[in-house]
Length: 462
Image (cartoon, rainbow, N blue to C red; front, side, top):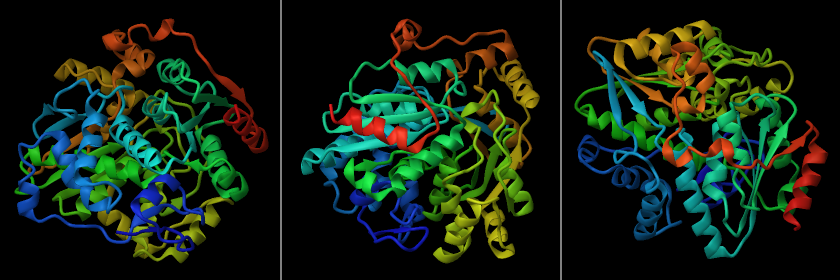
């Protein structure tokens, strides 16, 4: 299987090269040149399998000759061994036909662990085989950074630099990034918002002298391997509710569109998904675009759901590529327009997007009220992002199709917002109980590309 860029001007790559590269050299994002499909019989055969066995079945068609079956099974086993629940991604029933998919049992208590832990294992195996050393640079709105640092800390052939918006992540998110003591991981608190951090990372990938000089690699959701790993829990959860013999729907709280795009891939692979619902917070550019065809960033307003405080949604480019029937030329044009003031989606592409996705948004007060109400009615304590998903899901429930809402983070990652809504300050799991006692290591940086690049080169030289 080969991987192609959404902008059509980069060479086709193997899975291994696409994974290690991250962003294509034309600025686009990699996608498989074809999406394999599973028959109803093959999907039904997933019933009763462990999460790890399901992951092998879903991801194997995409990895080509990068790993043998035995190697890949070993990497998957290592990736999920540290999760705090035997099911890895358990389902909890919230109400009639409404289920919560708990994706927060990984080492950093967020859904990003599902992708980052396996990405870390695959990177390490590939690099040990080649003897190469790489520099990973990523941007985070809170959860990707801690998951990446956790996955790559202490590895001898990887340096990791994570840019996060100073003062715009929760204290738990920040400490998960700043307290690891390993010398190969670096937390950089940058002036600005997440979109600024993400822009600087893309600038570094587009500076080919720098990119090649430090062997730059990316693990943001621009990396296809991240999206692929997230496809797995759509299958595991849907099959547990009766797929392929019944349809299911999913609601996904999302800012960067990677998690819900994984659901789109699952649907293309043959999983009988009726609706994929995009749930946004007050920074609702995705909902606005799906409603009006206009994608025009108007600044990020900080919220109690900081991981969704995004206006430039990287993975939406993949959705546009599919909506434009995989024609790279209009996608490249839209991405150029985005650098100015934004763009308008064509009527045909908008219709294609609406055939794949529904959407809704959730205000700050509605988020808090949903946390309060869900605890009272179900006993389930939600983080603000999961609450946004629940509120929007409730607006899209259908009598004959079960709805699965993705719970993307543990409530203890956002204790202030949860306590304000419920009076309960959710405790961290025992393995993290000393998080607030650990020493922090963090470097403050300005929104200055050259200065950040200089810092990275100095750090990896030592």
